[in-house]
Image (cartoon, rainbow, N blue to C red; front, side):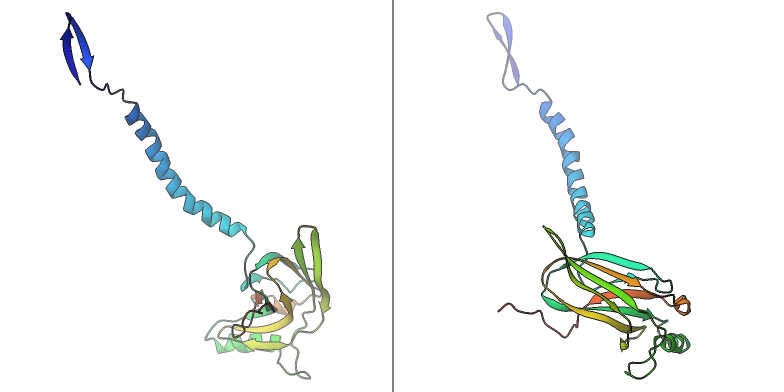
Length: 200
């Protein structure tokens, strides 16, 4: 920018900087950075809002009659899903393992069923027109099906589900105070050796 004399007058020529560009930069640059920081957080929060996808576990207090555990879930693969009760013990602690095993019982049909844990199971598909019940029944006897390094698993039921949105509700039908000191979860998963059911 330069000043020139013209007919005795001082005329300012060239581009006159108003400072607006700097103001624009000062205002929008922090805003842009804030958006970059917030977007991943919003994505994570939104992700948490969605119903979970199996496999997952939920705490279940089965020692008191009438206790329920309920959840929505998303199914993304057409599979047979297994609903189970998992009874946990301290890994590597043989005394604690034996204590929990006695409460759980064995896997034999005419053997020891352990502490009874009859349940009421309801599985519903959540559809635009409303909820459609797929399973609604009482499971009066659960048997030991599998075990791992820190748990025993008793199967409740297995349900074939197509991709969609579902609600699971499980209710304990009787008191079982003997299980008060055992961490128990409702497990919703599938056989890892299996493959999704293909469409024909």
